[in-house]
Image 1 (cartoon, rainbow, N blue to C red):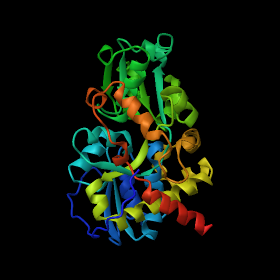
Image 2: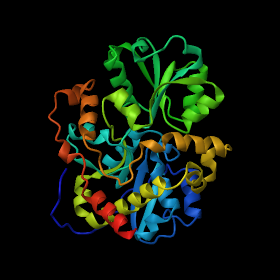
Image 3: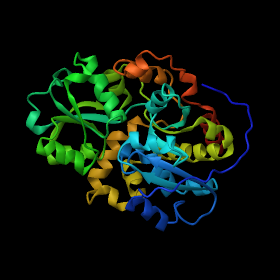
Length: 355
C-alpha cells in the first residue's frame, strides 16, 4: 500500500450531472440527506446498484447522517451494474464509484490510475444460483458448458467471477454464454423464463429467489469462508474507488468520506440486521421487511469493520483475474497502486479513540 506525503490543494471539481437518480435517492434528499440542502463540500458517487445489500454502506452512511456530520454534501446516483459505475467515474461524471475493487486492476492495465480508498468487504457477497428448472443438471461450475449464465452486466464483477469459476472447473470462457440481466426483478424474471440457466447475483435478489422457489444456491460467497472455498482466499469486493489524481488533489475531502464510511461499518458491526433494515429506505424491502432483514443478515459477514484492505486480498483478486482475462494475464499489475489504507487506518484510529 502507498503512504502519501504530498499535500495537494483542496479544490472541488465541477462535473457533469447525471440523470440516473432513482426514486430511492430522491427519498434520501427528502429525508434531509446530503442529496439535497446544498450544504458542505459536494461529492457525487455512482453506485453499482444502490439497493444491493453488498453496497449497503453507501445509502446507510447517508441515512445515518455521517456524510453531513463530516461537512459533506454527497449525492448518490445509481446504475444497475458495477461496470457502468466504473464508466461514470472514468468519464469524469462523478468523483467516486462504489463497486468492486477488481475494477481498479482492470483499469490499471488499460492505462487508468484508480484506487480503492476504503474497503467495505473481504468477501464478494455474490451467490451463484441455479434455476429450479435446471437444478438437476447443474451441480458445479464444471457443468457450465453450453449454459446461459446471468451476470449483472458484461464486464462487471459478476462477469469476472463467473468466468473464473468456470475456468477453475475446466470450462473455457467461450464454452458458455454470459447474459446481462441486471439484478432484482430482471434477474429473477430471466431465471423463471429460462432466459438463463443459472446466474450470479446478490441479496436481496437471492433471498427473493429462494422465497419464490425459483432456484437454489450453487455457490455462496457471502462469507469469508465461502470466499476462501470458492476463490482460495479473501476477496475484497465492495469499495469506494476514485481516480488517483482526484484523491491526491482532494485529500481532506477523501479523508472525510472515509471517516463517514468507517463509522458506518463500525455501526453495522454492533447492530442487528433488523436494526440496519429499519434505517434503509422503506421501498428497499419491497413489502417484505422480514425477508429484507434476512437478506441483510446473510450478507453481513462479508463486511469489514474498519474499511482496511484485508491482508492478501489484492493478491487473490489478481489471481482470479489472471485466470481468464487476456489483458491482465500477461500484464504486470502494480497492486500497491490499486488501493491505499492510509485514510481508513486514520479513520479507524479516530473511531477507536472516540470509544
